[in-house]
Length: 178
Image (cartoon, rainbow, N blue to C red; front, side, top):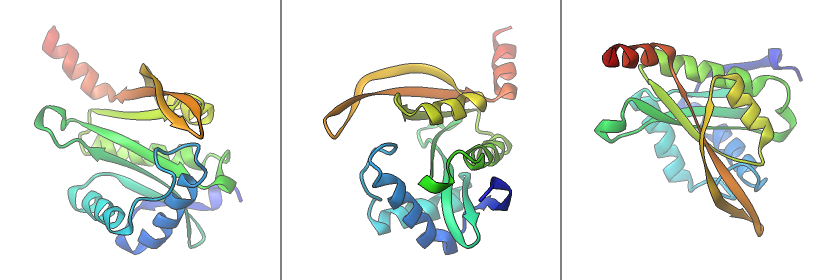
């Protein structure tokens, strides 16, 4: 199924069951997320409801009525960091490599810009070359590496820290220095 037949839209609470199933599916691959299964249903429902209530961008990808992926950016809560957000995303196996992740990421980043997120950061396993290429395509730059940041099935994995600074933010920061 090509990405043109997939709908990208903001999440609604009615999407929760499908979102939870997609999250659990990606987590159980034990390759991309920091947990090996979805978090408890109650905390995940609270996460989604909080994103909706607080205006944090969270999008889902649907193939027909099935949720096949998500992307969210959660604004940081401490006052000195609230200009920035942390990105999380995932796509179920059979829908990767079709441009859907790029569409999800673009929609989420555009909404973050409109909601005045100046910085979006993420952590990605260093061996996840597909995700790293996707993030670079959307302007993310490598800021550092947490060496031996994860252990999965006795495999040592570095974690890359990446971020994108929105152009308007960079120019306003430069104006403050000038």
